[in-house]
Image (spheres, helix red, strand yellow):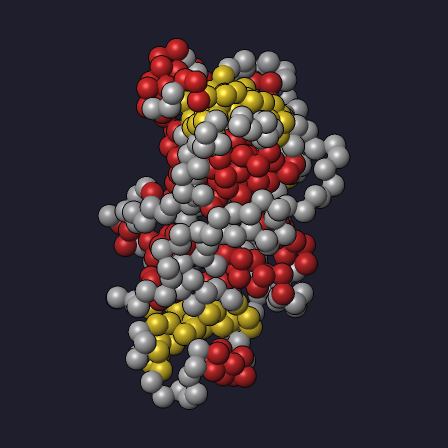
Length: 443
Ligand SMILES: [Zn+2]
């Protein structure tokens, strides 16, 4: 197709260690580095969507997040406030989309400069979506297009070269830096290092994103035919739940009724209110940069996004404006993409005071409603049919089942988010079991 032929590509120079068949470094201008930085602006919902759809087909498994995404995807419209609520969670808008639209290769189509005013042009309110109700009563169906900047994405203008290591540490280029990088890899001279120029396609950027979440050598993985496997297929170390008590005051709390298997202390499933379900939905709408920010980089995410994050942090102001830098390091949740009671105390980025909230009563889920959340974060609407199926599938003696209520505040929420990102099948147990009330041991 024509669109495919015109697809923009980006030139990248790779330095390859021939003997070990690995990329030792890449050299690139700001356009490529901007693309890597944009990974931090992507919410988990977008990451799962772009890596598992389209032609790229590089599905990446991130803890239990995929289960959550696909569980949410299967919920029918009657479980949602409106159909649009589901769209928002599965297709969250990038809070820094205004900048990302200037990327040479943009893998995230969630942002648009199209807005809708009401048919009476009262101009009191505007909307990102067609046919919402304006406060004057008319529907938003007058399309308007905002001006966009053409100033480039994140980094300052200029033809500076950057050096990117295979595990995505990025610095402005200089020969000494490169020498250090090579010597850290045990290379004493430039012999045996081959230069290779590649034209990076959109599919390859998606691959890079997918690999950057799970591998410590995404450049080798994507650009070398059969890269030597440097990454281990992350069997993650058990997560220890020793989170610093950050200012826990004032964070809203949510009650969660969990059902556990007494003899194994495993959480089998939880019964979630619509408020708790809304909170889970924000796992898909929080940008990666804000997730790393809230964990102060202590998060045991696999891959090398922590390196990418540190690279942004360490860049001097002359390479990146300080306001853009702090925006990437904590993009915040897009307006109306947060939940009413957010135990993680995350802020929304208020883009426009006069924007219509597409959700009824600020909820994603229909209110009131109840959901069953399985240990692996798959979610289902609570109905008698699903209760029976769940009991049958659990294969646990009824006498071995107990119910408890956990109050989910900041620490519990952080622990659950961490487990959702790192535990392949037991997010509830790994995230919340340590907060269960210890029952007296029967002798
Ligand atoms: Zn109006």
